[in-house]
Image (cartoon, rainbow, N blue to C red; front, side, top):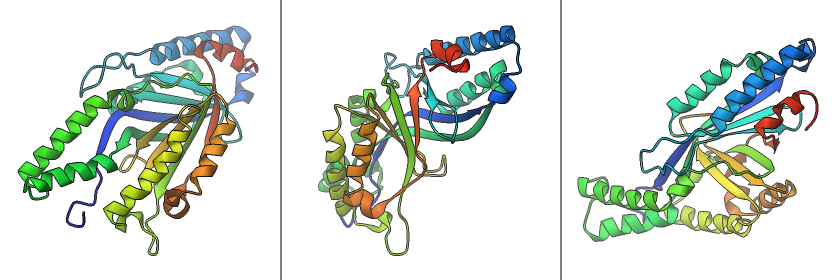
Length: 284
């Protein structure tokens, strides 16, 4: 593998936007009840429309995999509400932002944080097979023939993995989101580790996640060139304690213990859109 490109192949799918809001409760309490009801109803209508939007077909995307929006009541001082949006493009995400800004209730929301990314599947295993197959045919790396071989492999993989590339937001009760990087320091630098070593470590890392597959739905999104960190991680589960167990175990794994940096963690409870009015009245 020493003569092969060091960059693993990836597949990209849905564009993703996370929004984290503080709600201005003090100002909200000064609004007359009829006006509160009107604004809440307007926002519910907007969110219902956004939640049920069908994804547009294209780029191999299945029309049966709708892009969606989900609302969460956030715990802790970092904010009050989380909105997660899956769409077919950055333009569609931008349109969601603009539509939300037209809601009168938006005047009482202060966006404290956001995160932009795209669903990503890393292909360490198939990258090696693809590169070796291209080399066996005598193709030089990055030659026209090499690139065609790689493109064909990615096309086949993308078709097979379309449901994972264009997922719906799981309907589980709890969400945990956090961004992360791979270390690029002078002494420890993930990007200078030989490909075969990175492949081995990622394989072992993935085995841990697969053991939790029945309890946690994990969606990884890439954000290099899009946001401040390299990846965003969404975990969805019915039991929030499983987040702690999974992440704790993974930190003993070499990939995380040696090469990972983690950002802030955000946790929320799923808030069905039709329950927004109750939430605004202080009832979860």
